[in-house]
Image 1 (cartoon, one colour):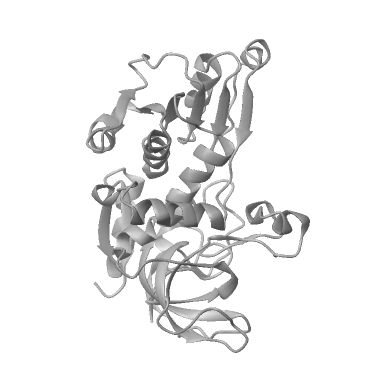
Image 2: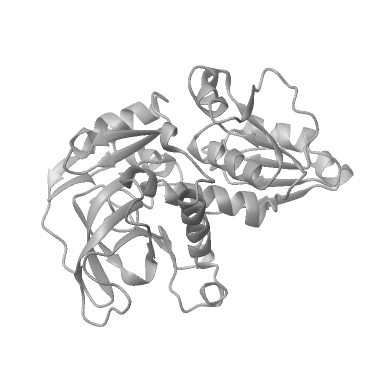
Length: 334
């Protein structure tokens, strides 16, 4: 089967190659991959950026997966050949205090499909049946592949950020997750402004504006003092703005991953009684919420997605790294 495999530390060591078909073990299924999204974590792993040295090659990348089950191992219940599902990417042990509480993304022994072990940038993938979530048969494959990052946006916006109707919300970071946060916050009834870097004014901010989102660049500095600031860029300067501009008693929810140390003025934290919370990944309930929002027409992201053939995976990585595409989706067989 054709797969995008990371075989070494540099970008040149990641390429599409032929690999043996996977075999389902106890509690597992084999899926024919319909589509797999490419995200910032894949870029970090591709380059072996600081903080991603733990990703050990060889490994097939890809954790934003939708597919159809073609094989079910003995002992798997509730899933049949022909069923369609997305994959929960952050996978806990299911037997610790955090997992029993539903916080599988906090599990101390968690693994990430496509980083810890072979993922979905491939024609077929082996997956634990415990981490499958059903999707409608009529949902477009490229949209279903976007459920995972949108679940991350839903988790930081609604669970961690606690956004409700009538609030003023600023989202910093005009990538796909940031735009997803803005769309979900607006759907919750908040007044939302999406803030991006000057380079985002070329395509990313216009793409968000076309969906009805109010946008600004960091140079404009006219977003007021929001109740909630969602930091989705991973830029230290954006975190500094969040500390300086969030209203007294407000909340800062941080979902962006930082490639360098970030600092902020702790006097703002103290004097403004700010609440700062981190948000990591998502859980199954976030996936189900996003699937329902998409199916009911409350969350439309088709215009943000760009399809690439699996054979063009390295071109998609390069385009994403250079911000020439907003959300690349790999389609095996194209």
